[in-house]
Structure formats: C-alpha cells, structure tokens
Length: 283
Image (cartoon, rainbow, N blue to C red; front, side, top):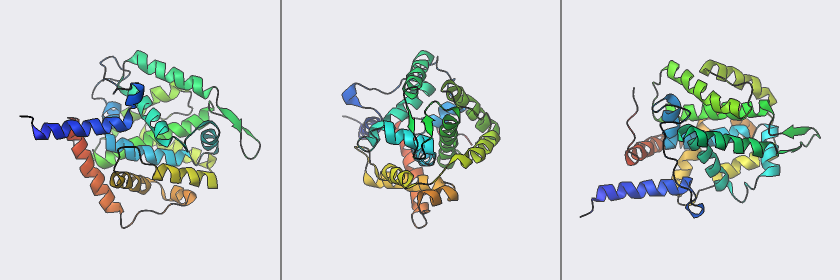
C-alpha cells in the first residue's frame, strides 16, 4: 500500500518543480554536481537551495532593479515580460541553479549565453542617451541587488544567526559569477555590498514605467501557484525593501499583513525543506 505521506511529498515536489521548469520544453531540474563552480554545503549553495528565501529575495531584487533606468529600459525594449513574466522569472531561476549547482562546464556555457545575449541589448533612454546591457555599472547594480536580496531572504526565513564570515564567503562566491558577466564593482564582503549599494543608489530614478513593471512583478502568478502563496511571497518581499525604494515605486509597507505573511512563508519554507529533504539550517 502506498505511503500517503510519501505520496504527498512527491506531489509537492512535482508541483514546485513545475513552477520552475518548463516540462513542455524538456526542462528538468539541475542535478547537483561535485564538479560545480562551488563546493557542496558552501554558503552560496545553502542560500540558493532555499526556495522561499530565493522567491522572496528574487521579487525584492527585481523591484530594486527596475529603479535603474538602464536596466528598466532594457526590459522595456528587449523583453516580452508583459506576455511572459513567468517565463522570464523561470529563465533567471534556471540560470542561478545551473551556475550554482551544475557542472562547471554547464555553468560556464550558461554565463557565455547570457553574455552573448547582453551584447545585443542596447538602445536609447528617454533623455536621448544610450544604454548598453554590458555596462559594468548597470550589471553591478543587478548583481548587488540579487546578492543582498537572496542572502536577506535566507537569513530572514532560514538562518537568522548566519555568521558574518559565512555571509562574506557568500559574497566572494557570488562574485565569481558577477565578474564573469562583466559587472564592476563587485562586492566580496557584506560591508562592501552595503557600500556599493549606497553608491549605486545615486543612479536610480522613479518613473511611471518602473511602477508599472513593479505592479506586474507583484501581480503575476506562475501557473500552479495558489493565489494565497503568491500573496504572501510578494507581501514579504515588499516588507524587505528599504523604505526609500517603496516610496519610489509607490508601494505601501505591509502593516496588517506583514506578520501573517512572514509566519506563512516561514511555515511554507519548513514544509518545502521537508519535501525536498533538505537538512535543517544550522544555528
């Protein structure tokens, strides 16, 4: 007789994998490799393995990235995000998975593909100036928002007591990918990340287009994702934003829903770690 608990676990795993992998295109989960760019159980693999932390952190990072005029214009000019927001998010998640967990040869191929795509992305900003996706400073903003956000999601939901040396190691590891993509400056410690974040903040600007994309990010719901799950993920992501960025994006800090959203995402994270048989976080 089938074990009902095991059947439930397998069903949950299949549902989650369906959100992140396009089975119609033959996509399957990236198998963890012992010959990856990063060794097993190192900080970057711990952080990027946690689904809830990556989901909340990923939404936070996207919202911050849309405040950069160059990153925003690239999305507006060269992306079908309005018709396929889920596809865009899915491709980003797959890139992170391959470069973090996949064999180093596959990781390098993925980085090369992104660099070739970026080489073709450019155009004109509303003020008439040029933008290029290969601009090291723009890529630095994209990277630092992702690194800060993924780590913040992990610390918030999994491991509040993560030691600072391990946080610094996370930045050093993620820097390998950022430099391969052409970003500069690239932080190698949490303190450097905070300094670069403050410096690059001067490049940002609020705009109706940024607010529009932010709403699309917050309101999109990947197929198979319950509305309640999407609501708590986005509410938690917005709560993690700096106050000034919420103002620029015309977003309200969750008040009545903040604690329920955090409690719900914490509970969902525990359930998913059980389903994927991930070890509990260390103190």
